Length: 81
Image 1 (spheres, one colour):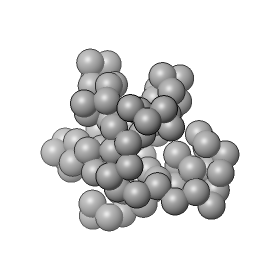
Image 2 (spheres, one colour):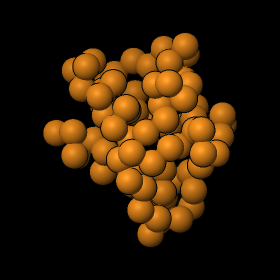
Image 3 (cartoon, one colour):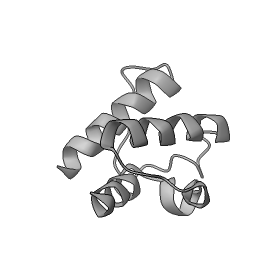
């Protein structure tokens, strides 16, 4: 399940946010702290996660401590299911 979550989120980021469909994002690659995702894209990502996985993301969680890697996101989603 976690692998499917990571794959789905990585595909969304590569295709919709970065507009680089062939970009491979590793599960431990920094998304926010590296500048790969900016604050505007972060909102798009949060909405995608809420819509796709049926979980609620609090505004206070939209930061590098919670959202910086695909592994962190997958763990957050899994904890809410």
